[in-house]
Amino acid sequence: MQKGVFIATKKDGTVYYRASITYKKKHISLGGFQTKHDAALAYHEANRLINTPALTINHHYDESPLPFEKWVVLLNYRDNGIYFSTPIYARNKFFDYYLSPSLVLKFDIDDLFYYSSHKIMQRGGHLFVADYGMQVNILSRYGIRSFAVAGKDYLFLNGDDTDFRHENLQIVNHYQGVSEVTYHGKKKYRARINVPGYFIIGHYSSEIDAAIAYNKAIDILRKNGVKKNYTPNYIEGLSPAIYAEIYSHLKISEKIINYRL
Image 1 (cartoon, rainbow, N blue to C red):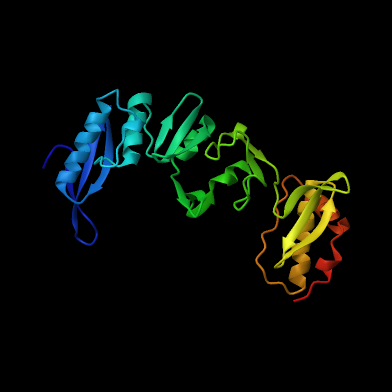
Image 2: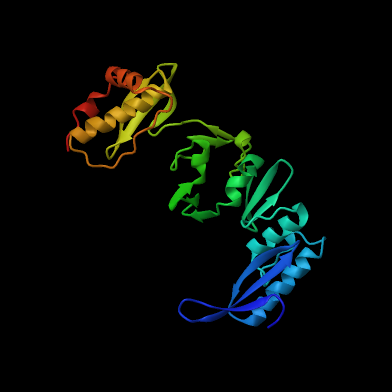
């Protein structure tokens, strides 16, 4: 067997070949391959990469025998001396997370520990990680709701929707069903709910009032027989007594109160 190539067997008995390389006293897996020739090519490519300082992430090519993710991992370890199993390349004061050669996300250094152990995946336009067996949208780390709308509920201040550094994100609407509006010439918070068809619950002086009004509308609709699976707003920092007091005094649209299936 060639250097850096090892024979392996899948659970169904299929034979395949694994490639790995030892660099800076660390044993790094390069992946599994159908043939020992492909595994050997991956090993030699990895060896060339770590021993050629002029090679960068931009030098990766489609026909490379080394998967792009491993290319990033090796370059980061070579240049920065820190090994991450996820495709992270550390920069000054931030890091890049490479989903592909053309899709690169930026994060603050404060998020480095989390994303070094949580692989980002993309599905249906959403970016998420697997955390304790659940799919967690990465927006939730910023207090942004999973199905919040960019440009409406939150903003990328520099216009770059791949830049997830904290300074670049501004939350406009923190709660489900709540948006800031101008109502009769004054700043208000509108709460509305889909029953189906959007119904305005009311206009309120504070964002928290509007969020609690949304929850109250959910309770009323459920009592009226609506079976839709609504997600109520979680209001952080309010005691149950204060929440109950606000809840009891909030006025709700008669259309919601009188709604029947």
